[in-house]
Length: 452
Image (tube, rainbow, N blue to C red; front, side, top):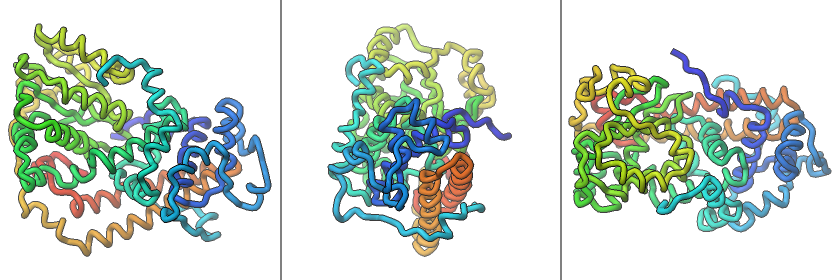
């Protein structure tokens, strides 16, 4: 069954939204050392959204110059400020382009209350410099493409634009900080690739305990096709793990949830089942960490968050937690009391039997991965062949994006946007082939519920 593509995705962009997406790609390409004539779209950013966005969408530039005529991509002053502080002499990854490739699209293929204004202020353009000043263009580019799994590259970027209300500067700052966080701090790509097996190999006892208790389990989908994460706080005790082990477990679950996403679905639903919850289970640290992740590192990834069967001791706890929430995240939270409440959002076949539904999935079952379940990780030859294909597809996507940014009229722009969508589908299929050669099998791969 095909699902309707929501607004603000690459398949459903308005003219002004498309301009903002072009601007963000132009800034990324500038940092990566990829030549693109972006003066027209960046002039729109400099002039202002209402007048300039319309002019770019109609194929006219608010300010033309000899640079546009001779093909030189002279960056605007604003764009230069964004990246001049962190461009490194050794970070050139520029690409040459043939006339043939440019003319023919690829056919096949928070500890205190924060207002919305407070959140926006965290991502002023100057912070982009801080995020990138210790990262080379090469590692930023590599991490960005590593971050792409079954996502479309444009739709991943659009999460940040939607989260920052289509402010290109703030979306760029937010994306920069996420890439910095993924590279230098949390390293979630290493966590998902190592999977549960890495916890045993590293003998991280608290991390292992979280995994074996199945405190959070992925199974089923809500009525909008979003994967559901069932969290059972009654199984949690702060003394069972270190803070780092708890964070690692949270990221494992979030990244595993991403593996279940299929276009056009781009977010997950979380069901906090407070059955059996007591004060001995209360731990504010993971709550704060999850909130910060969804607000700052995984924007637009949360569909709904259900708080189910909250006991009488919960209201004072909620009074504290709700003051940490960004209004957008707070709007996703729904309190449910019984099966009928859940059935408004989840089909009965995916509501656990112990909560009155029809799902007899064993939420306490864990399939421990072994070396024999990861035999493909040793097949370096096949992995490298798929990676070579992936590199070629990425280069095709970059060429199509350059042509799209430089498009002088709406018809040409649409032609290259369609080409980008087609190439994105190829990139998704390529990752499906690559996945077992780069990611350790999870309990969901082993029990057959995850089909990448």
